[in-house]
Image (cartoon, rainbow, N blue to C red; front, top):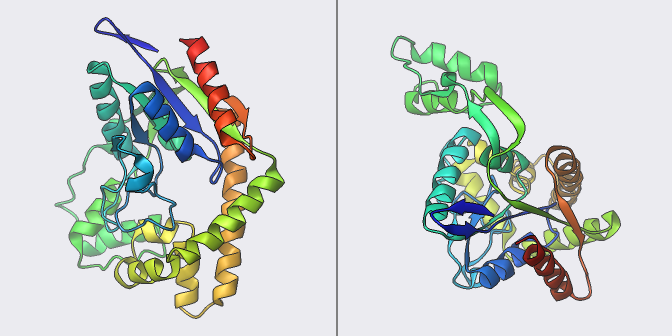
Length: 297
């Protein structure tokens, strides 16, 4: 908890791999502690990317205020520096109002720069490119991303890209700035992989193919589309490079690999109290975590 204006603020951080149950837990804890939810997911920030990112729905939110979800266009460049500014402002505003907070997400670097002592160097400030020609800017972009499809005459996009891809930071990365309880959800790897495979199948039932095609037609050259699992694999299908079955299997494979990397990252970067998910009765997992939080208070 964090002392502020005479109140004791509860900040709970929920981490873990994709498909483990973070969203459901965040809603239940937010209801229990009358908290707002701050998302730390680098893909759920984008409008129109709903099914493929397993974005929390309005129905799932159950009236709980959510922040940093569904607020950027797919065409927008959004850096980890931008996230730090936005998320810290929201978190500090909620603290000043004595409001409890649940932070949930699987993007480790977002959580790290929000909660820990990460200061971006001044070189990240917006640069003045007036002395550069379009061709010079284009060459600089291509040096960073050789596959970039930004047109040489789209000066605004070129400048935006360059301003958002300088991620040089200085930090004391182990210093936690907020008195937060960090909770992780885990389950046996084989079970998690089965859940991930089934979730990908469900995404297709929910309209992933149609959603991805619409995004491909409008945003296939954007950073968000080219980096998001589920969309970038289907792009290969739309381009005739692989079959739909191969795209679906590739989504499953990359999602499983991502989950593995998430475990490794959180174990190495954050002091997490892990809880095994009770598959047959998730409410028991929720009750166990609530008991842990109440004792910490």
